[in-house]
Length: 136
Length: 131
Image 1 (cartoon, one colour):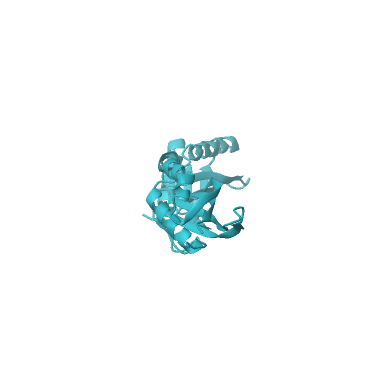
Image 2: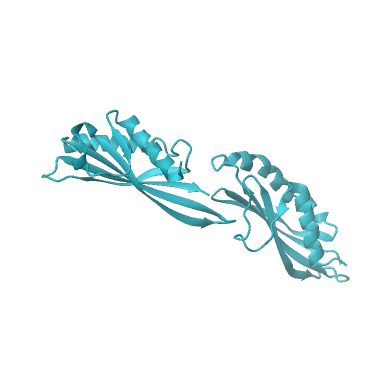
């Protein structure tokens, strides 16, 4: 039976495959590691949010996931090279429920992925939130 | 060249572009040590740097420079026109030729005294960059 830990591992692998981003050393602190110019990194956080018992025969742990995909612009003045280029491809892949549903440990997508984007200095951060139930 | 020195040189070059007769100098001197031919003169001095933290071990650096435009024997109006030309030149190059993210005059004051032949316009110029 897959665990929430297994789901996180599967998700991290899928994110790397979809974007080429390398996972940061910390998922919760943003002051420990410098992101090289032009590089793509991600932080992935998650935890059990609920237990889905709609199916009387089986219960499913629902894992809430939050992904932050971070890109340090090569040139602070050339934001759109990324935001209208590679970022579009990355977001399209990450908001596709299929990516999450196809995780080996996933049962189904409970809340479809949503995204928001922000810029701090030359760092562009895309945040994706999705809830996935784990196979029993 | 130092980062601040490069900024100061660019600001002085903008001054020369705005005021053809301008003489420039990095640093500051007593005007009594200068000759009439040394005016109008633009001094650039007092670089000051303040940093602010950004995520992932980066920071924004706000640099503040003082420019002092000194005229001799000119009317207040003539000095004001020169000051505006300099301010417009800095406004027209908001990245200091690509050196910084932004640059602008944040304050300027004209100082004059009835017993002194020179008039001075002090400018504070703030530039921002990321490091």
